[in-house]
Amino acid sequence: MTQTPPPEDPMQIRSPHIFNVLPVRQRLDHSSQAFFRFRRIGPERTLITNLEGRWLILTDAQMTAFATGALEDDSELKRRLSEHNFLREGWDEGAAREMIAQRKRFLGYGPNLHVMVLTLRCNETCVYCHASPMSMDATHTDMTPEIAERAVDL
Image 1 (cartoon, one colour):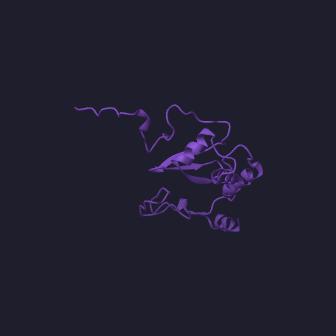
Image 2 (cartoon, rainbow, N blue to C red; image 1 turned 30 degrees about the vertical axis):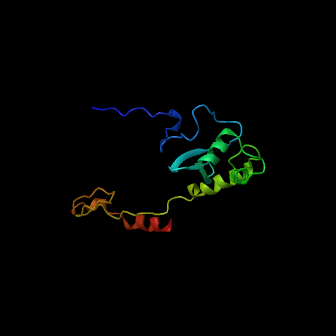
Image 3 (cartoon, rainbow, N blue to C red; image 1 turned 120 degrees about the horizontal axis):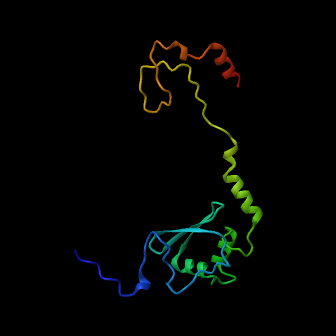
């Protein structure tokens, strides 16, 4: 079994699955960025997302500037990052709260589909069915007309 020789320059190792854009000796600047997640999505491209659901695609040079806190004050990149709430400086709490509330609004809506099981008497075995089929003689599993009317009134 042959082993692959190590790369000549360990600073040039790149992996599509881990954040490996920065040279090993450079450190992240945790004081300038708001919370974000990232993923390499191709050569020289990184997707960053935040808890609000906003996202940007950055080149390696842009990602390095963002991650190390080396953004120029009047740059287009800093403006875009700020607009999307990726920077602590100027972070808009109200906009973040509104975006998260908008994304989670569906949680209060309740179920979109209601299924009424009128009987468990069935001679089929449908893959999607959650009911436990009973014998065709099991009339005690039928819904009574009174309960059916009350269910419709809901």
